Length: 291
Image (cartoon, rainbow, N blue to C red; front, side):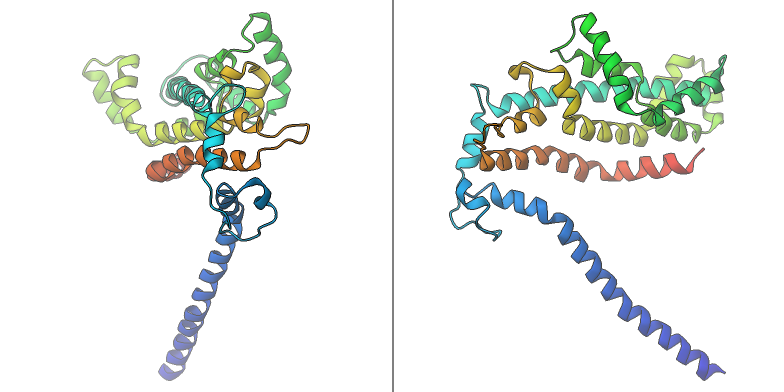
Protein backbone atom coordinates (compact mmCIF):
# COMPACT_ATOMS: atom_id res chain seq x y z
CA UNK A 1 0.00 0.00 0.00
CA UNK A 2 2.77 2.41 0.90
CA UNK A 3 4.50 1.71 -2.43
CA UNK A 4 1.30 2.52 -4.36
CA UNK A 5 0.86 5.74 -2.41
CA UNK A 6 4.47 6.74 -3.13
CA UNK A 7 3.97 6.05 -6.85
CA UNK A 8 0.80 8.17 -6.94
CA UNK A 9 2.56 10.97 -5.07
CA UNK A 10 5.51 10.88 -7.50
CA UNK A 11 3.13 10.86 -10.47
CA UNK A 12 1.26 13.90 -9.16
CA UNK A 13 4.55 15.70 -8.41
CA UNK A 14 5.87 15.02 -11.91
CA UNK A 15 2.61 16.32 -13.44
CA UNK A 16 2.91 19.50 -11.39
CA UNK A 17 6.54 19.93 -12.45
CA UNK A 18 5.60 19.47 -16.10
CA UNK A 19 2.48 21.64 -16.04
CA UNK A 20 3.99 24.59 -14.14
CA UNK A 21 6.59 25.52 -16.84
CA UNK A 22 3.89 25.16 -19.51
CA UNK A 23 1.62 27.53 -17.59
CA UNK A 24 4.47 30.01 -17.24
CA UNK A 25 5.21 29.84 -20.98
CA UNK A 26 1.54 30.44 -21.79
CA UNK A 27 1.40 33.43 -19.43
CA UNK A 28 4.61 34.88 -20.90
CA UNK A 29 3.27 34.41 -24.44
CA UNK A 30 -0.01 36.13 -23.55
CA UNK A 31 1.93 38.94 -21.85
CA UNK A 32 4.04 39.51 -24.96
CA UNK A 33 0.90 39.44 -27.11
CA UNK A 34 -0.75 42.12 -24.96
CA UNK A 35 2.41 44.24 -24.86
CA UNK A 36 2.97 44.03 -28.61
CA UNK A 37 0.94 47.20 -29.47
CA UNK A 38 2.76 49.16 -26.76
CA UNK A 39 6.19 47.97 -27.90
CA UNK A 40 5.29 48.74 -31.53
CA UNK A 41 4.15 52.25 -30.59
CA UNK A 42 7.34 53.00 -28.63
CA UNK A 43 9.57 51.72 -31.45
CA UNK A 44 7.54 53.66 -34.05
CA UNK A 45 8.11 56.86 -32.09
CA UNK A 46 11.81 56.63 -33.08
CA UNK A 47 11.15 55.97 -36.78
CA UNK A 48 10.61 58.46 -39.60
CA UNK A 49 7.02 58.65 -40.83
CA UNK A 50 7.79 56.83 -44.07
CA UNK A 51 9.32 53.90 -42.16
CA UNK A 52 6.58 53.34 -39.57
CA UNK A 53 4.30 51.20 -41.75
CA UNK A 54 6.97 49.75 -44.01
CA UNK A 55 9.45 48.44 -41.44
CA UNK A 56 7.88 45.59 -39.39
CA UNK A 57 10.95 45.34 -37.15
CA UNK A 58 10.87 46.81 -33.67
CA UNK A 59 14.32 48.29 -34.19
CA UNK A 60 14.29 51.38 -36.46
CA UNK A 61 16.50 51.40 -39.54
CA UNK A 62 16.90 55.17 -39.11
CA UNK A 63 16.85 56.13 -35.42
CA UNK A 64 15.59 59.69 -34.89
CA UNK A 65 14.50 62.02 -32.09
CA UNK A 66 12.75 64.37 -34.48
CA UNK A 67 9.33 62.95 -33.64
CA UNK A 68 9.72 63.97 -29.99
CA UNK A 69 11.01 67.41 -30.93
CA UNK A 70 8.24 67.97 -33.44
CA UNK A 71 5.56 66.57 -31.13
CA UNK A 72 6.64 68.62 -28.11
CA UNK A 73 6.61 71.75 -30.24
CA UNK A 74 2.89 71.18 -30.58
CA UNK A 75 0.46 72.56 -33.12
CA UNK A 76 -1.08 75.95 -33.89
CA UNK A 77 1.47 77.73 -31.73
CA UNK A 78 0.66 75.73 -28.57
CA UNK A 79 3.32 73.37 -27.24
CA UNK A 80 2.49 69.91 -25.98
CA UNK A 81 3.83 70.95 -22.59
CA UNK A 82 0.79 73.21 -22.31
CA UNK A 83 -1.47 70.20 -22.83
CA UNK A 84 0.42 68.33 -20.10
CA UNK A 85 -0.04 71.21 -17.65
CA UNK A 86 -3.75 71.43 -18.46
CA UNK A 87 -4.16 67.69 -17.88
CA UNK A 88 -2.24 67.83 -14.59
CA UNK A 89 -4.44 70.69 -13.35
CA UNK A 90 -7.64 68.90 -14.35
CA UNK A 91 -6.52 65.58 -12.86
CA UNK A 92 -5.46 67.23 -9.59
CA UNK A 93 -8.80 68.99 -9.13
CA UNK A 94 -10.69 65.80 -10.02
CA UNK A 95 -8.75 63.78 -7.45
CA UNK A 96 -9.32 66.35 -4.71
CA UNK A 97 -13.03 66.52 -5.52
CA UNK A 98 -13.59 62.76 -5.64
CA UNK A 99 -11.65 62.11 -2.44
CA UNK A 100 -13.36 64.83 -0.40
CA UNK A 101 -16.93 64.39 -1.60
CA UNK A 102 -16.73 60.61 -1.92
CA UNK A 103 -15.21 60.05 1.51
CA UNK A 104 -17.70 62.38 3.18
CA UNK A 105 -20.65 60.63 1.54
CA UNK A 106 -19.17 57.22 2.37
CA UNK A 107 -18.61 58.23 6.01
CA UNK A 108 -22.23 59.32 6.27
CA UNK A 109 -23.59 56.13 4.74
CA UNK A 110 -21.28 53.86 6.74
CA UNK A 111 -21.25 55.37 10.24
CA UNK A 112 -23.92 58.05 10.64
CA UNK A 113 -27.66 57.67 11.18
CA UNK A 114 -30.06 59.96 9.33
CA UNK A 115 -33.49 59.84 7.74
CA UNK A 116 -33.96 57.84 4.52
CA UNK A 117 -30.42 56.51 4.76
CA UNK A 118 -31.19 53.13 3.17
CA UNK A 119 -33.29 54.66 0.40
CA UNK A 120 -30.61 57.20 -0.48
CA UNK A 121 -27.93 54.50 -0.44
CA UNK A 122 -30.04 52.38 -2.80
CA UNK A 123 -30.49 55.36 -5.12
CA UNK A 124 -26.75 55.92 -5.06
CA UNK A 125 -26.16 52.31 -6.08
CA UNK A 126 -28.69 52.69 -8.89
CA UNK A 127 -26.55 55.43 -10.41
CA UNK A 128 -23.87 52.78 -11.02
CA UNK A 129 -26.26 51.11 -13.49
CA UNK A 130 -27.18 54.38 -15.20
CA UNK A 131 -25.38 54.77 -18.56
CA UNK A 132 -23.19 57.84 -18.80
CA UNK A 133 -24.73 58.85 -22.12
CA UNK A 134 -28.16 59.27 -20.52
CA UNK A 135 -26.97 62.29 -18.54
CA UNK A 136 -24.75 63.87 -21.20
CA UNK A 137 -27.39 66.01 -22.95
CA UNK A 138 -29.15 67.43 -19.85
CA UNK A 139 -25.79 68.06 -18.18
CA UNK A 140 -24.48 69.88 -21.25
CA UNK A 141 -27.66 72.00 -21.46
CA UNK A 142 -27.31 72.89 -17.78
CA UNK A 143 -23.69 74.03 -18.07
CA UNK A 144 -24.43 75.84 -21.32
CA UNK A 145 -27.24 77.79 -19.63
CA UNK A 146 -24.91 79.01 -16.89
CA UNK A 147 -22.20 79.85 -19.46
CA UNK A 148 -19.62 77.28 -18.34
CA UNK A 149 -18.99 75.57 -21.68
CA UNK A 150 -15.39 75.91 -22.89
CA UNK A 151 -14.18 76.02 -19.28
CA UNK A 152 -12.91 73.35 -16.90
CA UNK A 153 -15.85 73.80 -14.53
CA UNK A 154 -18.13 71.15 -16.13
CA UNK A 155 -15.30 68.64 -15.68
CA UNK A 156 -14.48 69.70 -12.10
CA UNK A 157 -17.72 70.67 -10.34
CA UNK A 158 -19.37 67.19 -10.56
CA UNK A 159 -16.34 65.69 -8.80
CA UNK A 160 -17.02 67.87 -5.73
CA UNK A 161 -20.69 66.79 -5.64
CA UNK A 162 -20.11 63.06 -5.04
CA UNK A 163 -21.48 61.91 -8.39
CA UNK A 164 -19.08 58.96 -8.67
CA UNK A 165 -21.07 56.14 -7.08
CA UNK A 166 -18.28 53.63 -7.61
CA UNK A 167 -15.88 55.50 -5.32
CA UNK A 168 -18.57 56.07 -2.69
CA UNK A 169 -19.39 52.38 -2.60
CA UNK A 170 -15.69 51.46 -2.47
CA UNK A 171 -15.07 53.70 0.54
CA UNK A 172 -18.32 52.70 2.26
CA UNK A 173 -17.17 49.09 2.25
CA UNK A 174 -13.80 50.09 3.67
CA UNK A 175 -15.12 52.47 6.34
CA UNK A 176 -17.62 49.88 7.55
CA UNK A 177 -14.64 47.74 8.54
CA UNK A 178 -13.35 50.39 10.98
CA UNK A 179 -14.17 49.17 14.52
CA UNK A 180 -16.98 51.04 16.24
CA UNK A 181 -14.99 51.01 19.48
CA UNK A 182 -12.51 53.48 17.99
CA UNK A 183 -15.32 55.87 17.14
CA UNK A 184 -16.83 55.49 20.60
CA UNK A 185 -13.46 56.24 22.19
CA UNK A 186 -13.03 59.31 19.98
CA UNK A 187 -16.55 60.45 20.87
CA UNK A 188 -15.76 60.13 24.58
CA UNK A 189 -12.67 62.29 24.01
CA UNK A 190 -14.92 65.00 22.61
CA UNK A 191 -14.74 64.38 18.84
CA UNK A 192 -17.77 65.46 16.89
CA UNK A 193 -18.73 64.01 13.50
CA UNK A 194 -16.59 66.47 11.50
CA UNK A 195 -13.50 66.16 13.65
CA UNK A 196 -13.92 62.38 13.74
CA UNK A 197 -13.97 62.38 9.95
CA UNK A 198 -10.71 64.37 9.67
CA UNK A 199 -8.81 62.81 12.56
CA UNK A 200 -9.98 59.19 12.49
CA UNK A 201 -11.92 58.07 9.42
CA UNK A 202 -9.83 59.68 6.69
CA UNK A 203 -6.40 58.48 8.00
CA UNK A 204 -7.67 54.92 8.57
CA UNK A 205 -9.28 54.81 5.11
CA UNK A 206 -6.00 55.76 3.41
CA UNK A 207 -5.84 52.65 1.14
CA UNK A 208 -9.34 53.34 -0.17
CA UNK A 209 -8.50 57.04 -0.58
CA UNK A 210 -5.36 56.26 -2.59
CA UNK A 211 -7.30 53.75 -4.69
CA UNK A 212 -9.83 56.47 -5.46
CA UNK A 213 -7.05 58.87 -6.40
CA UNK A 214 -5.40 56.34 -8.72
CA UNK A 215 -8.60 55.46 -10.56
CA UNK A 216 -9.55 59.14 -10.81
CA UNK A 217 -6.12 59.96 -12.21
CA UNK A 218 -6.30 57.22 -14.85
CA UNK A 219 -9.89 57.90 -15.90
CA UNK A 220 -9.49 61.68 -16.05
CA UNK A 221 -6.13 61.54 -17.82
CA UNK A 222 -7.52 59.19 -20.49
CA UNK A 223 -10.91 60.90 -20.80
CA UNK A 224 -11.54 62.08 -24.33
CA UNK A 225 -15.28 62.40 -24.80
CA UNK A 226 -16.01 64.67 -21.85
CA UNK A 227 -13.10 66.99 -22.62
CA UNK A 228 -13.99 67.07 -26.32
CA UNK A 229 -17.58 67.94 -25.42
CA UNK A 230 -16.83 70.93 -23.20
CA UNK A 231 -13.48 72.30 -24.42
CA UNK A 232 -13.14 74.12 -27.73
CA UNK A 233 -10.23 76.51 -27.03
CA UNK A 234 -6.91 74.94 -28.02
CA UNK A 235 -5.19 76.67 -25.09
CA UNK A 236 -7.42 74.62 -22.75
CA UNK A 237 -6.84 71.30 -24.51
CA UNK A 238 -5.56 68.33 -22.52
CA UNK A 239 -3.21 65.54 -23.57
CA UNK A 240 -6.07 63.40 -24.90
CA UNK A 241 -7.31 66.20 -27.17
CA UNK A 242 -3.78 67.25 -28.13
CA UNK A 243 -2.99 63.76 -29.44
CA UNK A 244 -6.03 63.88 -31.69
CA UNK A 245 -4.72 67.05 -33.35
CA UNK A 246 -1.89 65.08 -34.98
CA UNK A 247 -4.46 63.27 -37.11
CA UNK A 248 -5.72 65.54 -39.87
CA UNK A 249 -9.04 64.76 -41.52
CA UNK A 250 -7.53 65.84 -44.86
CA UNK A 251 -4.91 63.08 -44.67
CA UNK A 252 -1.87 65.02 -43.43
CA UNK A 253 -1.11 62.80 -40.42
CA UNK A 254 1.98 63.18 -38.21
CA UNK A 255 2.16 59.57 -37.10
CA UNK A 256 5.66 59.73 -35.66
CA UNK A 257 4.94 62.81 -33.55
CA UNK A 258 1.67 61.30 -32.35
CA UNK A 259 3.34 58.04 -31.30
CA UNK A 260 6.10 60.00 -29.56
CA UNK A 261 3.63 62.08 -27.54
CA UNK A 262 1.50 58.99 -26.87
CA UNK A 263 4.58 57.35 -25.37
CA UNK A 264 5.21 60.37 -23.15
CA UNK A 265 1.55 60.47 -22.11
CA UNK A 266 1.85 56.92 -20.75
CA UNK A 267 4.77 57.80 -18.47
CA UNK A 268 2.61 59.42 -15.72
CA UNK A 269 0.19 56.47 -15.80
CA UNK A 270 2.95 53.89 -15.42
CA UNK A 271 4.65 55.95 -12.72
CA UNK A 272 1.49 56.26 -10.63
CA UNK A 273 0.65 52.58 -10.99
CA UNK A 274 4.15 51.33 -10.15
CA UNK A 275 4.55 53.47 -7.02
CA UNK A 276 1.01 53.04 -5.68
CA UNK A 277 0.02 49.53 -6.79
CA UNK A 278 0.38 48.26 -3.21
CA UNK A 279 -2.31 50.66 -1.98
CA UNK A 280 -4.41 49.98 -5.08
CA UNK A 281 -4.53 46.24 -4.44
CA UNK A 282 -5.06 46.72 -0.70
CA UNK A 283 -7.87 49.22 -1.21
CA UNK A 284 -9.74 47.03 -3.70
CA UNK A 285 -9.23 43.77 -1.79
CA UNK A 286 -10.12 45.18 1.63
CA UNK A 287 -13.02 47.19 0.30
CA UNK A 288 -14.43 44.13 -1.40
CA UNK A 289 -14.10 41.81 1.59
CA UNK A 290 -15.51 44.05 4.30
CA UNK A 291 -19.21 44.75 4.33
